[in-house]
Image (cartoon, rainbow, N blue to C red):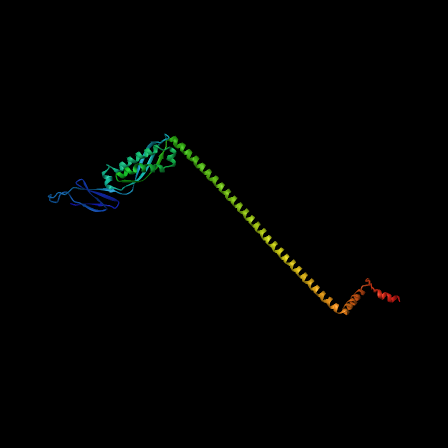
Length: 294
């Protein structure tokens, strides 16, 4: 009668014939024939298949009481994540790879934690993982196991130390809260100072802009006033020039026509005669006075 065995994708099988490993089996269905034929005439090898789980698994190292570097006794639980990467080595090299891994990690954790102070354990748990990986990784690889990570799961302190730690943690939380409050106030003050400075810069910029615009307007007014004065001066000079030209023309005309000059004198006398306060002095030359004496 035939026996069947099914190996899942998550496992591998080691096939032994008469106690000797002959094959590592992948996922699938496999038949195991009996040692003897139906009539008992043919003897076949005795077949045995050992199935090895290849999935990632957790291993918890519970309640390890360890004395730290500063002589504080603590109980530590460690969780290790691992997987089998070589099923043949995992079965052949050690009696039980899970038990062996437990022991190796336990000893590595003791060595690491014993070299650390309590403060270092509390503030730098990553160091434990790094120490365990560095200490056990190579040895575990020798029996077909890969360690993915190792972390502190629980820390248990003595009763009086636990109370002290609780007080320290409460004080730290209070200090952190006060620090956050102080930082918040400082940030608010900083923001207010920035806002006031920005307002001051804006007002200064507006004032400077107003002064600049006022200077521009003043310059424009002065320019226009200068242009106006120059235009007035030009017009005055043009009027004076025309007046001189007209006077020169009149003088020339009077010089050529003495009667016109006499006519102008009569016009002037006529205008003066209209004023009762006006006095007219008429001079006579010497020749005229001599004739009057004779």
